[in-house]
Amino acid sequence: MKAIGKNGKDGGILFQKRLLITGVLSPRSIAFAIAQAASAEGAEVILTSFGRAMTLTQKSAARISGKPDVLELDVTRPEQLTALASSLKERFGNIDGVVHAIGFAPEECLAGGFMTAPWESVATALQVSSYSLVSLSQAMRPLFPPDGGAIVALTFDASRAWPLYDWMGPAKAALESATRYLARDLGKEHIRVNSIAAGPLDTVAAKAIPGFASLRQLWARGAPLGWDAGDATPVADTATFLLSSRARDITGQIIHVDGGFSSQGAAV
Image 1 (cartoon, rainbow, N blue to C red):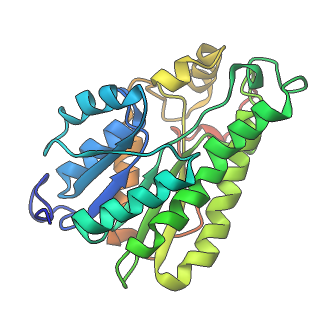
Image 2 (cartoon, rainbow, N blue to C red):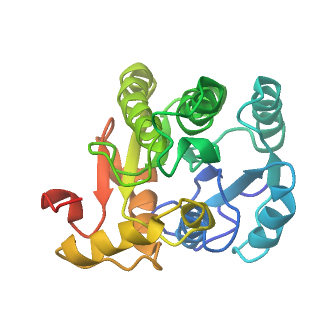
Image 3 (cartoon, helix red, strand yellow):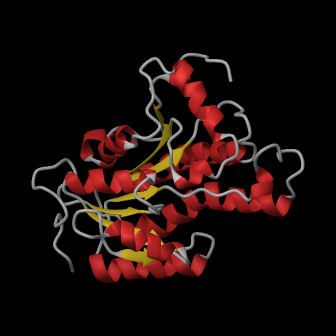
Protein backbone atom coordinates (compact mmCIF):
# COMPACT_ATOMS: atom_id res chain seq x y z
CA MET A 1 0.00 0.00 0.00
CA LYS A 2 1.30 3.45 -0.86
CA ALA A 3 1.94 6.11 1.73
CA ILE A 4 -0.95 8.49 2.07
CA GLY A 5 -0.28 12.11 1.28
CA LYS A 6 2.88 11.48 -0.72
CA ASN A 7 1.81 13.94 -3.43
CA GLY A 8 1.34 17.06 -1.35
CA LYS A 9 2.26 19.12 1.63
CA ASP A 10 1.59 18.07 5.21
CA GLY A 11 -1.24 20.03 6.76
CA GLY A 12 -3.14 20.81 3.55
CA ILE A 13 -6.93 20.55 3.71
CA LEU A 14 -6.75 17.20 1.89
CA PHE A 15 -3.77 15.79 3.78
CA GLN A 16 -4.09 12.00 4.22
CA LYS A 17 -6.96 11.88 1.72
CA ARG A 18 -6.94 9.56 -1.27
CA LEU A 19 -8.91 10.75 -4.31
CA LEU A 20 -10.01 9.08 -7.53
CA ILE A 21 -10.24 11.65 -10.33
CA THR A 22 -11.76 10.88 -13.72
CA GLY A 23 -11.68 12.98 -16.86
CA VAL A 24 -8.04 14.09 -17.03
CA LEU A 25 -7.07 14.30 -20.69
CA SER A 26 -4.80 17.28 -21.30
CA PRO A 27 -3.39 19.92 -18.94
CA ARG A 28 -6.32 22.09 -20.06
CA SER A 29 -8.83 19.66 -18.58
CA ILE A 30 -10.79 20.91 -15.58
CA ALA A 31 -10.01 17.58 -13.93
CA PHE A 32 -6.28 18.24 -14.41
CA ALA A 33 -6.60 21.52 -12.51
CA ILE A 34 -8.51 19.70 -9.76
CA ALA A 35 -5.85 17.00 -9.55
CA GLN A 36 -3.11 19.62 -9.26
CA ALA A 37 -4.97 21.58 -6.61
CA ALA A 38 -5.84 18.46 -4.60
CA SER A 39 -2.26 17.24 -4.74
CA ALA A 40 -1.01 20.63 -3.54
CA GLU A 41 -3.39 20.30 -0.58
CA GLY A 42 -1.87 16.99 0.45
CA ALA A 43 -4.05 14.42 -1.31
CA GLU A 44 -2.86 11.26 -2.96
CA VAL A 45 -4.42 11.29 -6.42
CA ILE A 46 -5.34 8.37 -8.67
CA LEU A 47 -6.52 9.01 -12.25
CA THR A 48 -8.59 6.99 -14.71
CA SER A 49 -8.63 6.82 -18.49
CA PHE A 50 -9.15 4.26 -21.26
CA GLY A 51 -8.51 3.50 -24.90
CA ARG A 52 -6.56 5.94 -27.03
CA ALA A 53 -6.93 8.62 -24.36
CA MET A 54 -4.82 6.58 -21.92
CA THR A 55 -1.52 7.79 -23.39
CA LEU A 56 -2.61 11.44 -23.15
CA THR A 57 -3.72 10.97 -19.54
CA GLN A 58 -0.42 9.33 -18.63
CA LYS A 59 1.49 12.26 -20.14
CA SER A 60 -0.65 14.68 -18.17
CA ALA A 61 -0.19 12.63 -14.98
CA ALA A 62 3.57 13.07 -15.31
CA ARG A 63 3.03 16.83 -14.85
CA ILE A 64 1.13 16.42 -11.57
CA SER A 65 2.99 16.29 -8.26
CA GLY A 66 3.59 12.68 -7.27
CA LYS A 67 2.99 11.42 -10.83
CA PRO A 68 -0.28 9.65 -9.99
CA ASP A 69 -1.17 6.20 -11.26
CA VAL A 70 -3.60 5.97 -14.17
CA LEU A 71 -6.08 3.08 -13.99
CA GLU A 72 -8.35 1.89 -16.78
CA LEU A 73 -12.03 2.83 -16.71
CA ASP A 74 -14.67 3.01 -19.40
CA VAL A 75 -17.78 3.98 -17.43
CA THR A 76 -20.09 2.36 -19.99
CA ARG A 77 -18.67 -1.08 -19.15
CA PRO A 78 -19.86 -2.51 -15.81
CA GLU A 79 -17.04 -5.04 -15.72
CA GLN A 80 -14.48 -2.22 -15.76
CA LEU A 81 -16.21 -0.49 -12.85
CA THR A 82 -16.03 -3.76 -10.91
CA ALA A 83 -12.39 -4.28 -11.87
CA LEU A 84 -11.48 -0.73 -10.88
CA ALA A 85 -13.07 -1.14 -7.46
CA SER A 86 -11.19 -4.41 -6.91
CA SER A 87 -7.89 -2.87 -8.00
CA LEU A 88 -8.33 0.15 -5.73
CA LYS A 89 -9.24 -2.09 -2.79
CA GLU A 90 -6.22 -4.30 -3.32
CA ARG A 91 -3.69 -1.53 -3.98
CA PHE A 92 -4.88 1.31 -1.79
CA GLY A 93 -7.39 -0.03 0.71
CA ASN A 94 -9.87 2.81 0.63
CA ILE A 95 -10.62 6.13 -1.02
CA ASP A 96 -11.91 9.35 0.51
CA GLY A 97 -13.22 11.16 -2.54
CA VAL A 98 -14.25 10.83 -6.17
CA VAL A 99 -14.33 13.46 -8.92
CA HIS A 100 -16.70 12.75 -11.80
CA ALA A 101 -15.53 14.82 -14.77
CA ILE A 102 -17.00 12.71 -17.55
CA GLY A 103 -19.23 13.91 -20.36
CA PHE A 104 -19.86 13.07 -23.99
CA ALA A 105 -22.58 13.52 -26.61
CA PRO A 106 -22.40 12.30 -30.21
CA GLU A 107 -22.13 15.05 -32.80
CA GLU A 108 -25.75 14.65 -33.90
CA CYS A 109 -26.91 15.57 -30.38
CA LEU A 110 -25.35 19.04 -30.60
CA ALA A 111 -25.43 22.16 -32.79
CA GLY A 112 -29.11 22.18 -33.63
CA GLY A 113 -29.68 18.45 -33.44
CA PHE A 114 -32.05 18.49 -30.47
CA MET A 115 -35.17 17.63 -32.49
CA THR A 116 -33.48 15.22 -34.88
CA ALA A 117 -30.96 13.23 -32.82
CA PRO A 118 -31.88 9.53 -32.77
CA TRP A 119 -32.52 7.79 -29.46
CA GLU A 120 -29.38 5.69 -29.79
CA SER A 121 -27.25 8.86 -29.76
CA VAL A 122 -29.28 10.47 -26.99
CA ALA A 123 -28.96 7.29 -24.92
CA THR A 124 -25.18 7.46 -25.29
CA ALA A 125 -25.14 11.07 -24.10
CA LEU A 126 -27.28 10.23 -21.07
CA GLN A 127 -25.34 7.10 -20.15
CA VAL A 128 -21.91 8.72 -20.35
CA SER A 129 -22.77 12.18 -19.03
CA SER A 130 -25.44 11.38 -16.41
CA TYR A 131 -25.95 7.75 -15.47
CA SER A 132 -22.20 7.24 -15.09
CA LEU A 133 -22.28 9.40 -11.95
CA VAL A 134 -24.63 6.85 -10.38
CA SER A 135 -22.75 3.78 -11.62
CA LEU A 136 -19.38 5.20 -10.55
CA SER A 137 -20.73 6.19 -7.12
CA GLN A 138 -22.22 2.73 -6.64
CA ALA A 139 -18.95 1.04 -7.59
CA MET A 140 -16.85 3.24 -5.29
CA ARG A 141 -19.32 3.23 -2.38
CA PRO A 142 -17.81 0.20 -0.56
CA LEU A 143 -14.34 1.79 -0.64
CA PHE A 144 -15.22 4.80 1.51
CA PRO A 145 -14.19 4.59 5.17
CA PRO A 146 -16.82 4.49 7.95
CA ASP A 147 -16.65 8.26 8.37
CA GLY A 148 -17.53 8.71 4.70
CA GLY A 149 -16.10 11.14 2.19
CA ALA A 150 -17.15 13.17 -0.83
CA ILE A 151 -18.15 12.84 -4.46
CA VAL A 152 -17.93 15.91 -6.70
CA ALA A 153 -19.29 16.11 -10.25
CA LEU A 154 -18.94 18.79 -12.92
CA THR A 155 -21.94 20.28 -14.68
CA PHE A 156 -22.92 23.25 -16.81
CA ASP A 157 -25.96 25.17 -15.57
CA ALA A 158 -28.91 23.03 -16.66
CA SER A 159 -31.60 25.49 -15.55
CA ARG A 160 -31.85 27.06 -18.99
CA ALA A 161 -31.47 26.18 -22.67
CA TRP A 162 -28.12 27.18 -24.17
CA PRO A 163 -27.37 27.88 -27.83
CA LEU A 164 -26.19 24.76 -29.66
CA TYR A 165 -25.73 22.76 -26.41
CA ASP A 166 -28.88 20.75 -27.17
CA TRP A 167 -28.91 17.22 -25.66
CA MET A 168 -26.02 17.96 -23.32
CA GLY A 169 -28.45 20.28 -21.51
CA PRO A 170 -30.90 17.51 -20.52
CA ALA A 171 -27.92 15.24 -19.79
CA LYS A 172 -26.55 17.80 -17.33
CA ALA A 173 -30.03 18.30 -15.86
CA ALA A 174 -30.15 14.56 -15.18
CA LEU A 175 -26.67 14.75 -13.62
CA GLU A 176 -27.78 17.56 -11.31
CA SER A 177 -30.90 15.66 -10.27
CA ALA A 178 -28.81 12.52 -9.70
CA THR A 179 -26.59 14.59 -7.42
CA ARG A 180 -29.54 15.25 -5.14
CA TYR A 181 -30.79 11.66 -5.15
CA LEU A 182 -27.31 10.29 -4.46
CA ALA A 183 -26.95 12.78 -1.60
CA ARG A 184 -30.20 11.39 -0.19
CA ASP A 185 -29.22 7.73 -0.49
CA LEU A 186 -25.55 8.02 0.53
CA GLY A 187 -25.98 10.53 3.34
CA LYS A 188 -26.55 7.81 5.93
CA GLU A 189 -23.07 6.55 5.04
CA HIS A 190 -21.64 10.06 5.52
CA ILE A 191 -20.83 10.32 1.81
CA ARG A 192 -21.48 13.84 0.52
CA VAL A 193 -22.41 14.41 -3.13
CA ASN A 194 -22.25 17.83 -4.79
CA SER A 195 -21.84 19.24 -8.28
CA ILE A 196 -20.01 22.32 -9.52
CA ALA A 197 -21.68 24.33 -12.29
CA ALA A 198 -18.68 25.97 -13.93
CA GLY A 199 -18.70 28.78 -16.40
CA PRO A 200 -17.39 28.00 -19.90
CA LEU A 201 -13.74 26.96 -19.88
CA ASP A 202 -11.34 26.37 -22.76
CA THR A 203 -11.05 22.60 -22.52
CA VAL A 204 -10.63 20.12 -25.36
CA ALA A 205 -14.19 18.90 -24.76
CA ALA A 206 -15.64 22.42 -24.80
CA LYS A 207 -13.95 23.33 -28.04
CA ALA A 208 -15.60 20.31 -29.64
CA ILE A 209 -18.99 21.94 -29.01
CA PRO A 210 -20.02 24.00 -32.07
CA GLY A 211 -20.60 27.63 -31.13
CA PHE A 212 -18.67 27.43 -27.87
CA ALA A 213 -17.26 30.92 -28.54
CA SER A 214 -20.79 32.34 -28.24
CA LEU A 215 -21.01 31.03 -24.66
CA ARG A 216 -17.74 32.72 -23.79
CA GLN A 217 -19.15 35.99 -25.13
CA LEU A 218 -22.24 35.65 -22.96
CA TRP A 219 -20.06 35.34 -19.86
CA ALA A 220 -17.86 38.24 -20.96
CA ARG A 221 -20.95 40.46 -21.03
CA GLY A 222 -22.90 39.07 -18.10
CA ALA A 223 -20.61 37.86 -15.29
CA PRO A 224 -20.40 40.54 -12.54
CA LEU A 225 -16.94 39.38 -11.49
CA GLY A 226 -15.81 38.76 -15.05
CA TRP A 227 -14.82 35.33 -16.27
CA ASP A 228 -11.51 33.99 -17.54
CA ALA A 229 -12.30 30.99 -19.73
CA GLY A 230 -8.62 30.03 -19.67
CA ASP A 231 -8.39 29.70 -15.89
CA ALA A 232 -9.85 26.57 -14.27
CA THR A 233 -8.31 27.22 -10.85
CA PRO A 234 -11.46 28.78 -9.31
CA VAL A 235 -13.31 25.54 -10.11
CA ALA A 236 -10.40 23.44 -8.84
CA ASP A 237 -10.23 25.37 -5.57
CA THR A 238 -13.96 24.88 -5.04
CA ALA A 239 -13.61 21.16 -5.72
CA THR A 240 -10.82 20.80 -3.16
CA PHE A 241 -13.01 22.53 -0.58
CA LEU A 242 -15.97 20.25 -1.32
CA LEU A 243 -13.72 17.19 -1.08
CA SER A 244 -12.38 18.29 2.30
CA SER A 245 -13.87 17.96 5.77
CA ARG A 246 -14.44 21.72 5.76
CA ALA A 247 -17.51 21.01 3.62
CA ARG A 248 -18.71 18.33 6.05
CA ASP A 249 -22.34 19.56 6.16
CA ILE A 250 -22.74 20.38 2.46
CA THR A 251 -24.43 17.81 0.25
CA GLY A 252 -26.94 17.64 -2.58
CA GLN A 253 -25.92 21.08 -3.83
CA ILE A 254 -25.13 22.59 -7.22
CA ILE A 255 -22.39 25.16 -6.55
CA HIS A 256 -22.05 27.82 -9.26
CA VAL A 257 -18.49 28.89 -10.00
CA ASP A 258 -19.17 31.21 -12.91
CA GLY A 259 -18.22 34.75 -11.97
CA GLY A 260 -21.80 35.31 -10.79
CA PHE A 261 -23.31 34.94 -14.26
CA SER A 262 -26.09 32.59 -13.10
CA SER A 263 -27.33 35.19 -10.58
CA GLN A 264 -27.99 37.94 -13.10
CA GLY A 265 -30.67 36.84 -15.55
CA ALA A 266 -28.42 37.77 -18.46
CA ALA A 267 -30.00 37.24 -21.87
CA VAL A 268 -29.01 34.04 -23.65
